[in-house]
Amino acid sequence: MLKLHFSTFTLEDFLQNYWQQRPVVIRLGFPEFADLICPNDLAGLACEDNVESRLIYKKDGEWQAEAGPFESYEHVDNLAWTLIVQAVNHWSPEVARLVEVFSFIPKWRFDDVMISYSTPGAGVGPHIDLYDVFICQGSGRRTWRVGEQGTHRQFAAHPALLHTDPFIPIIDVELLPGDILYIPPGFPHDGVSLETSMSFSVGFRSKSARDMLSGLADYLIDQDLGNTLISDAGRQIHRHQGLINSQDFNLIQNQMRAVLEDKTLITKFIGSFLTRTKCLLDLQELDDPYTEVDLLAQLQLQDLKRTGGLRCFYFEDQVEQRICYVNGECYQFEAFDSNAISLICDQERLTWSDLKDQLIPSDGQSDCADLLTTLTEWVNLGYWYFEDQE
Image (cartoon, rainbow, N blue to C red):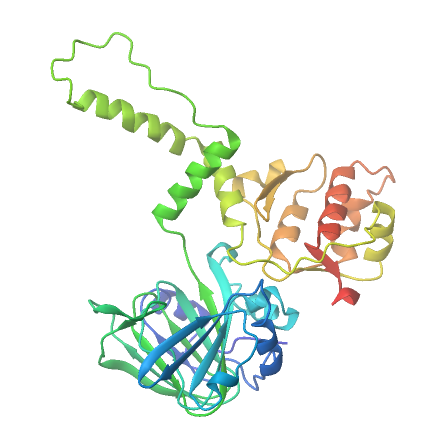
């Protein structure tokens, strides 16, 4: 089982002194780390239409970038090249286990696990990311240079590649299998493979205000909300027809503020918005769906595992209302122990011992039919699956 190891400082030290502040190398953060997916399987994923991938290389001194899916890699056989596949945790249960190791950061901040396979001399060029990343070195060796945060000119080395000018490194290091390089947003960095290698990048990204407001506008339209018009009865004579005076500006601002200060509305929006995934999930809808009776019987024999990348959240002040959000939808249950909400959203695996008291109350009368019905629906949709389905 993967377990993060800090040799020179504690997890608390990392969060207080490094997270979102400065980069750091964690030597042997994963002792005896082995690749969680083989290169052939990674290359196979990049051949699929519903998997986001890129191939980056230099040809005749010029940077090249191609987007998948790929039919072949023969055209780069004699070049130094890097294959990047996004959200591999959605498609590989083994890779998805890497996400659990970083549970000290809330899942709403989590982005995905990106995996890169590089031949000797390959990289993607010096660049700056706008997210936190833990680059976990798998097989092979790779050098990394990280510069100081600051004003760095960025330019398009290729229409699909944004690079930055050369920088003075504050970290210049060779990563070996099991080593981890943490880089906060805004620090320029550049990695080059010394030999054929794989890197597993666990990314964390928050949403910009622009993205949140754009999502809120879509939510208001979809839910037919925010339709209240400005009311200005008793207004004074307006003498400058083209002027939006301070009183009218305040009316408009207050109209918008009323939406943002509607806690119920904003809570439902955030729950819905943050549980949607940017990349497709590997959902296997069942041809022979479970009945509720079948599900109860199977759950006593096998654990349920959450599909990689599925996002499930809840809010502190809604736990007692038994509300949670799964894959963009809000679910509210009628009557069961509210601890089940945290079990469903916190844990990657659901066991019979976790849920039996919720699904079969001690009095034998199931007053929690809505939980069983919804759990059966989720399994039939492929949100959770029994282990023998891997």
